[in-house]
Amino acid sequence: MNKKAETALSEYEILVVDDDSKSLDLLTDLIISAGYRVRAIRDPLLALESALASPPELMLLTVSMQGIDGFELCQQLKQDRRTIDIPILFVSSSDDADDRVRGFQVGSLDYISTELEIWDNTIFPPQVSIVLFRVVQATLTNVSRHASASHVRVECQLSDQMVSLSIEDDSVGFDTALIENLSSHGIRGMYERAGSMGGHLQIESKINAGTTIKISLPMNGHENHE
Image 1 (tube, rainbow, N blue to C red):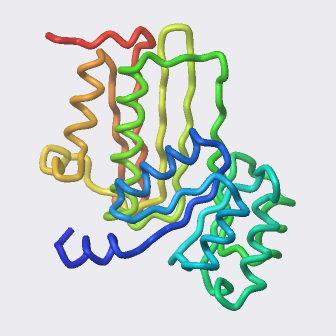
Image 2 (cartoon, rainbow, N blue to C red):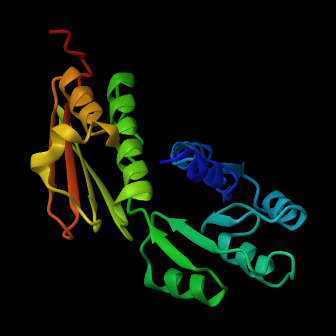
């Protein structure tokens, strides 16, 4: 990406509203890594005041929040001339059809289902958490900057000894025979991170047929120094 494009992205501010601090931090880190500025707010009422005072270029809202939910917040934003033109996206772990319909009814541009499951009793070793996050971060950054994808699906599976993560998109894809020449896209780093943990990374991609990245890591989180 050239310096002019990077400057344009850095001037593009996204207001993210989520009353769950962990989800808010994750979304914030992913958006910043893609080159955008982020205004992150947990309280939906404070978010409303902030948007009215200084409208952002885009807003991401979660559906379920304390105080007022994302639907009501969106509705109020669309009723004010200062914020009526802000594109609004809903981000939710639910793929409920009624929620999708209601989101469009109150004026959202799209409804993104993350389809993520949280295992409250599962604690990932720090090394595993870092590697998984970095792989997802690098993949989503590539998607936003290079891949021209409209949908991304992230799935995670757990067993007693392994954690497996799959990231599938509908991007333009690429020739996997050229992976050695794609280090600038972070692919080499993904392989190195997986290998350092005694894990395995697999990339499947075809031109105009999307890309799937799969990584499996041992749950013991032991780093391989060989």
